[in-house]
Length: 258
Image 1 (cartoon, rainbow, N blue to C red):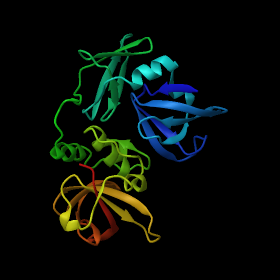
Image 2 (cartoon, one colour):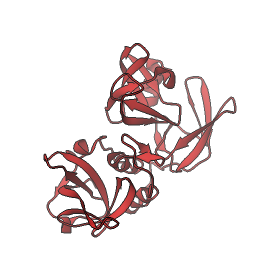
Image 3 (cartoon, rainbow, N blue to C red):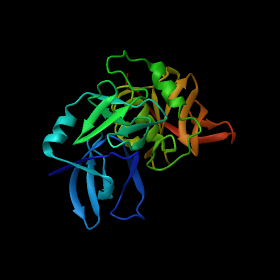
Image 4 (cartoon, one colour):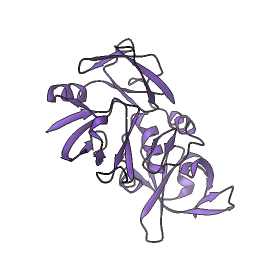
């Protein structure tokens, strides 16, 4: 078994071993992977955080020994809270990293991976900080007007479940990657009138498949990624797009994770 880590800003993870294949998710700086198989110039990986699988270019993955992988797996984790910041390597190279990137065993702004040393002076999550729903909402609002990107997880392109996963992640709650997967987690809330800020709302298509998710930010308002990250009205029918003046998503399910 082989192991690796993402030490670049963001890496596309594709559905098939081809540059033409769709991006199904992304790896952010510091995310660990297990290598399941190799195929010509491609590597099939499993992301440790959410067990999501896909294909990456091996030139974009830094190989880890088994010992280093398990050392990092068991280390104290914090996440970057800046939309964009940089880490600096021992050879003075700067690597831009994005909101939600993973740093491990940080001490006085410094950490190391393999034989590489890094320093970071941006904002980080505090593992000992008490949980606040208001922080989830504040973090989601940082993404407002970010463009929609299928498989995206960053302020430069994000999909609906990427948005909910990343803002929950930096607040200490682990969600699966896709909307349909996230809908299997949490406690079911029966009525939209019972929904509270921080709850996730799921929406289905004509076949009854869950295809969309958004985050309640206040009564009858939801933030979600649809074309861009936006705020719209929501009621027992679904999402009402204020610009288009029509319903765009059919309400299926409400879940609470807190």
